[in-house]
Image (tube, one colour):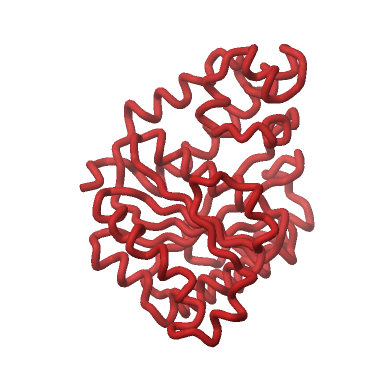
Length: 282
């Protein structure tokens, strides 16, 4: 049961006071299918770094029809243009090249680039990062490229995630890999079920960092999904703001905020182990 929403803003304040930044240059959030929570995790990753006062540049690699769903502040690579780009100099890399100078400058100044890879974009990323040695280019600037591979707790998703981890290791050997297992239903992740055992048999042998994303109760993610607000804004919001952004009554909105705060803390506590902020970025 999450604590009262009155503690939600303290979650952010604790982050900003205790976590300076690591030299993480790029975090690419990937997954082999749709509806896995990739965009949500990309937004949370951005918020995690921003909580430590680290500047973040967010890029979405998606089909053009989804452009309107994202902030105009985000860079956008249209996957629908990948076919044409295949015949350009540099092939698909030409689509990312227009943003690369900005990304390089950001890395040099301690900024983190978070790339949200929509369905199918993981293949685009590999086709760009492999030939260009993207991880090595980031390493040459004193930072690291991380690839977060999303999975849900079912056997097929686990198999797809394991295959993607293998592809990243083969084509992007200089990249660090984080496996993020997203629990999209309220089933307790510790239950010993045939499905859980099947997933464990696939994922446990992988030699990569791993975090567990818990189920977010009270429809808290959906409640504020259309508000356009960041996690920071929601966790710090007043009851009046929460009611306005969710379109719900005060008690429902406060409950959703409290559940969101508990979900946020459960994830960022794990991210702090993966990316332990021990020294200034530069």
